[in-house]
Length: 281
Image (cartoon, rainbow, N blue to C red; front, side, top):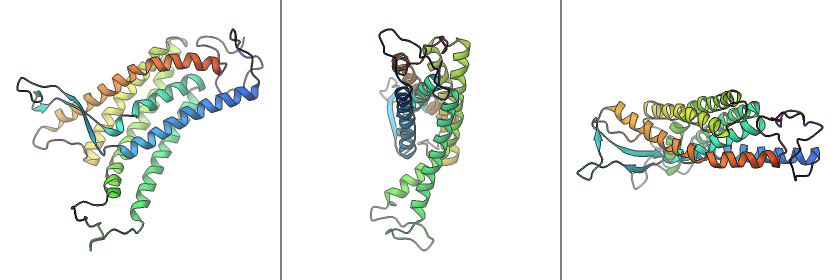
């Protein structure tokens, strides 16, 4: 498949009923689509890192005969995810599109830029906290609570975001690089066929890596998971991992249709050879 970071061939792959485009129009189209996916990826990443673990959402719970949550090994089976997880599957869809249309090198570049963006978010949150404001500062240098007994909202978000970003930076980098690697592994194995297989195969593996890393780091480093200290910790962490992964699994399966349909449309719009077709006619 012809990628944007390779020279545009002198002869375009011809699609029946579509006019041949100039190199300038092709370049503009390919750059615009790339910027769309890269911008959506990076914007979503910044949003989820700020929202992060500011709130956990109870998707559903498995109830027992008494009408309350079913308890297994002393742990209630409640399916909950952090609010920052909601847009996260979109990042994997974007990297799959970039991998498919523009190649592994560009996909990896976007992943590394995403890591830099994480560091930028942390820098702004840190800098915004150390600059003098209008809050009352105690003798020990800490921000005094307000009349309601709470610290200003910024500092609450800042503390939670630091924990979320630290967890997500490590998990994100590993998971996204795994996603790109596995995507191209399946692409080579199937010789460019079966879009659904490499889309789901890469995303499901990387999401498992990401979910496990985020839950463990969030708990052991940020201590931000809503766990019950009176119950065994590992069964609770396992429930968080399984429920988070179940959400991402459902999202990954649902994005198969837009990925396959979108790829088929975009290879025509960008005049790229279909999977399995040589770029040199």
